[in-house]
Length: 451
Image (cartoon, one colour):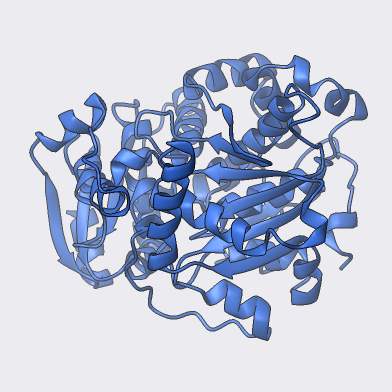
């Protein structure tokens, strides 16, 4: 396969999606959305990567977030008329996504202004609205199952809360997410059901994959997933990379350069995958830095050429505590499983907890801007490689993935000051937890889901 960075596929009359395993027939967006994964166990990817038109790229700075999002969505989704896509996006993206100048050449794309103060609100809310559109048309009900290392669960729970015809089951690792994240998942009730798993995020993710591969369970519960393995989560993430570039264009030229390095804090690698799609569609991103915490299986893979997944370890940036990232298979597919080709577009590096704390501390001293631990991993990763000559004439856009107040213990340890919680988080702390505790055992999960 050619290097992905050189591919510019024409858009077909109908967009189909195929499995990365290559043993499943092409399907529509609706089918991929409801199935979650292909029947051969692989993740769905677009059969062809559409290209942005030159006229669209030339006028980005004159377009709104909603206008850009509708254009991106319409390139992938055939079954929803544009007028309905506009309505879906208007409901889903009812919060700003600003590009903030941090210092020198570094910009932060603040993705955390949604209801759960994390970037995953973008994908979760879009997916909830698209599922609801189809379900209302077809008069059906569905169960959404999702594993979370922190932010996905709260974003999905809030995005799908009280959405008609949808029941949500969220699996999270006991004792391994922040108290605030747990409260955001476990205090909603109604159509949101929290399951606390004795194990790691990878255990939770494995249980979800087993459930989706269980034909009896899928049939009886009409089961799908809202993890980043679902295309309904992935496609809207492409939109904000384009929106970031549109905002960058409005900034005075003496402050920015249109050549972009995108730094992506990475756990399950869906956010990076979306950025690579945006690049393949024609957005001029020169390089990606995939920044992980001490769960460094992907940096190790890039260094050695051997992929060795292992149980995740707990870090300060817990939403990225993933030892076997699902979306890596999509990235491998894009580059024909050639690590050397991947490395032409992607650098991967690991940041320790100590480096994370230091970045929060030092950035706050210089700028008074408070980074959350995940965004700090991204900023620190850029600083570690910022002495390279090719960086000097480029703009650095870091995906700022969460609000610092979601991690008060870590941030207070770094800056030595008390964090005042926003009202939306303060209110969640005082609500009653509702969850069901199970061991990391599929039979117990299945029995619970069928009860």
